[in-house]
Image (cartoon, rainbow, N blue to C red; front, top):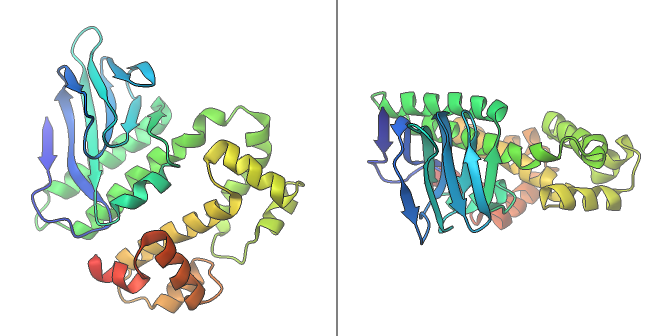
Length: 267
């Protein structure tokens, strides 16, 4: 059993308030919810989670993310329930709802859970190493959040509209975000209008195609701001597909609340 609670001030965009594995979970009831985003994943056995949305059973490898202050309770179903978990904080904590598509709860399947599990194991290893590399831990935490967020569209993968139009555009954005992409170009690649493409994105991802493109570029910019502290803002803008540094700074400040330089200084 490894359970680690944050013991230093929050200085990074994303970090763990707590993280753990091999925990034999007892019954928990939180009428007022939990104050942080909270991810729970079954390692062995099974557990039942009750929320305002209903009841769900988490089998081995399956997980659930809950937003702050969502009423919930959970307990084992059958024999011992062994879990892995993470709770999230950071100086950019207010960006987590956007990362998660403003969903209050997200379920993860066993295949996705395997990748998340490995990242949590890495996070525990980083958290226990000395000296503590807070920037490496922040990148790891961000990777966990992104992996969980990726499952927001996993349940739609068998729907033709999602599979034929949304998914190819998402893959193009994620592989070519640094190029001068436009929604017009992206929509032509799947032979539909920009307006219809954005309607489909809103249907499946709760954001327009342009918002998804911008959000993905900003996430890559944040990674560079954290991991490449000597890289100039103009170069980060160029590497993440923004037309010029002034536009990049304006978009970044509107989305994050601070300029890229201020974000870097905070972290």
